[in-house]
Structure formats: C-alpha cells, structure tokens
Length: 318
Image 1 (tube, helix red, strand yellow):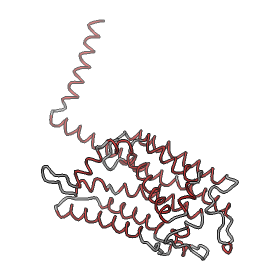
Image 2 (cartoon, one colour):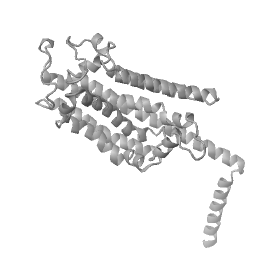
Image 3 (cartoon, rainbow, N blue to C red):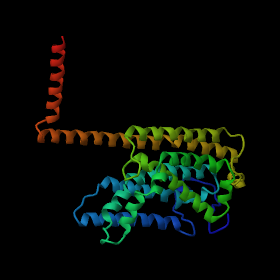
Image 4 (cartoon, rainbow, N blue to C red):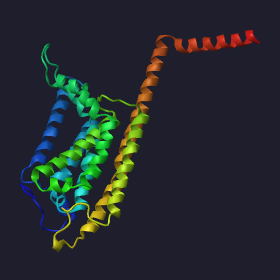
C-alpha cells in the first residue's frame, strides 16, 4: 500500500488488536475528537440557556464515536489491512453498529436546537442545515429507493468487483473506503431510526419493513463469502508466512462475522422502533384525553348521537 500506513509485523492477538495504535496520519483520532467536542459544545450551549438534553442521547453519541475509534485507532486498523476477517470486523462495526449509535444521539436535532438563528436577511449554519433537510437532494438520498440499493451495492459491488483491490493500494483509497462504510450506514439507518428530522418520515411499520428487506441481503452476503471456494479479493491472498494463517480459511471466518453481525444491530433498531411506537401512541392517547377534557368529550358524544340516530332509523324502517 502506498502512503503513510502502519502494517503489523507480529501475528494478531487480542492485546495487539485492541492496543491503541493510530495510523501515522491521525485522521480518525482527530475526527473522533472533533465529533465529541462539537456535540459536547452543543449540549453545553443548550444547558446554559436552560434547555434539557437527554443524557441517553449523549451516551449513545459518545459510544458511537468510541466504536469508530475502536476499529480505526487501534491495532484493528493495521490488522484490517492484512487479514480479511479483521477487515470484516471493521466493516461491520462502521456500517452496522456505529451509525445506529450515532443516530440514537440525534445530532441533527441537537444542531437545530443549538445553532443560533441568523439575523434577518442573512444565512447562517442553522439556515443552511434546514435548507439541506428540505432540499431535493436530501429527499433523494434518504429515500429507500436510494438507500437500500446503496446499502446492498456497498457489499456486493465492493467485494465481488476489482473495486476493493483498487482502493486498498493507496492511503487515500483506504480512507475513502472507511468513510464510505460509515456514510452508507448513516444514510441507510437515518430514515429508519426516525429520531432526527428527515424528508421522508414513513410510519413505524414501513420502517420495520425497510429494515427487514435489507437484512436478508446482508446475511446472504456473509453466507456467499463463507461458501466461496476461491478468494474474492487479491489483497488478502498472501498473509504473512510466519502467522500460519490460511487466506481462504480467514476469508471464511470473515464471512461468518458478516453473517452473524447483522443480528445484533437488527435487534437494537427493532427495539428502538418499538419504543418510539409506544411513546407515539402514549402521546396520542394523552392528547386525546386532554382534548376530551377541554370539550367535555364532544367527539364521543357526537359518535353516541350518531349511533342513536342509526338505531332510530332502523326502528322507523321496521
């Protein structure tokens, strides 16, 4: 690989995989620190003016950033360029786990509440973000007609074409691939999670359907990798001889990781959707109760009068 990349020389162990070891150009650590700093500054701004912000959202965001750092700023980052199985751990975390946790932090909602409103006649960051959310581009990239094919193509198109080997031959290509994994996951889960504002806001059942449509393709990808009799990519064809690792066996392990990994994120998203559905129904029932209290249950009274009218009409006809 051309560029400032650290490649391990010793065989992998749990300690070496999890040890702090950012790449020579610390792009990922700086990006993670910036994400934490901006989010924290926004939360502080809200609390200084007396607006609450759920601690659970802050914890979710922090955990999401930590998962990104765990697979890019540790030994996993280096071993992921040498072993297919470790690379697949990187891919699954960045595309399936980190996006869910980051979206549970509701960063767009936080930005809309924390950014100041620009003076009349001017356009500030808040206005730009609002314009983006209302734009045609946002509507297209958040549509399931776009996100679902992109989510599927990022698996099959990357590993079953020469694209992966092309990307792995340079530092810029490798960095693009990591950013691509995270971006695709964020786009796919953004409308499904339904926490932040989005151009498309389907009902809970439709969001569950979109989730369940995508996951079988993901599971089948893992099965296809496990059952492959040949190597999918040339980059991992020759593990270091002293490590005594079979390239095909390591690829099979990577396929098993991809197949098994879809279960946990699916469960997390499903639980989040069910919790949102319950809270939505609870709020709707509370609004109905308040309305009934204000108008002395006029809706129920009108409905009962309608039933009485129908019964009287039946008696008259009889």
